[in-house]
Image 1 (cartoon, rainbow, N blue to C red):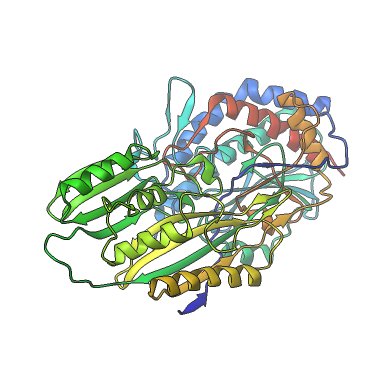
Image 2 (image 1 turned 90 degrees about the vertical axis):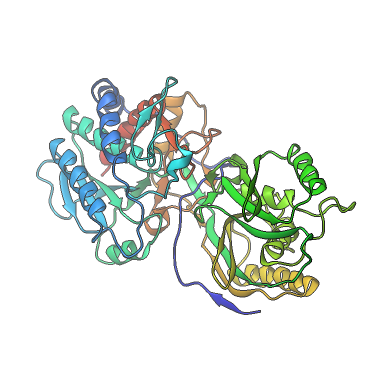
Length: 520
């Protein structure tokens, strides 16, 4: 068994909502009259404008492309140009730093050393499979019930559009600001944080920041984005011409998405096997299609995509297809000859199953009272040439060290190897750092804004399963755009935000920014 540690910091967006168990000190403050007037003005004048701008931003396919960066990719260049043009039309200042765009609203006569309020967002998006969308993912469309559908609508182009018009409304309102409002739009949040880390070495961050990339009421805890990646070596077996063989198994689109699609191919199927598989499939939450093809019987499994930080919101096609192929005691679904695909299915059924919290992965699973349980999901199964590469995405709370987690993960894998007599190779582990923020100076202000506009008495901060750029900024609290208890659609194959949610976000972002920018 070989092992190597990954040095990359490829993080993705967050989500598993966990309510705070214990009351926090402090009293949420009701927004001032200035804040409420500006928020009312924003909604009255810019609700449709923010939707029109969101449509423009969604039109750019700003996913990471191999061999290109936001500095060299013409799509990103066009996206930044469109964003800059819109911001300048709204009377805002714009600076293009390559991977980072800064869009700001400064008090009149403000000097270079004025204090700031930071608003952290990102302009890149995750990939989308056009075959799983009712229209192009990069064309914002509206449904009859007010859903605005498009890649980035919620994560994170909707929040960018809302922030622009919140700043415009504040500018129009004539509120006397004491801080510069600085909207930071990073172009590689979904793929590479290193350029942002480099930028922050010379950039003076605000002492209070909000991240518009998560959930309400206010996020003070984020689990650590983590990953186990390994290769199951290619296996060659000889079997009789009539022996059913599991020849192929794969699924998933990218590491931070609960996979919606998975596929298996069985050579030499017999009628009894097909009947047993179809009977079992009826009891599973996936949709299955059985298709006779030249290579054998192909099983297409369709689940439901979701952000991998909220695996409970999805139906994991990979996990359930592996469960479908589990041998039965009566032999109607046989013990498969140990092809690479069969080894993969056995690994998934033995160490993962259809649970969400690593229950089968040895003693790896654990939980924290505030942040909740660690989650574990198989998100990507691909043919790597020399074998099958398995990617498991985890979201870990506080409570265990990376060294302890590494030891437990390796013990589970080693135990499976010894039982099955096979050899796992190229094991890479990455254990992201959980974040807990205490005593942020603007927590009560944000809770007060949320409580006022949602009629929520005594709202409390929460922890999420995702991992945002908030980790890189001082006093960075995530504030929306998703409501608690509502499924987060970022990273899914049907991402949307509603008109009503955009309106509420515009009210709350405007009011919050007024309150924070009027501080000394």
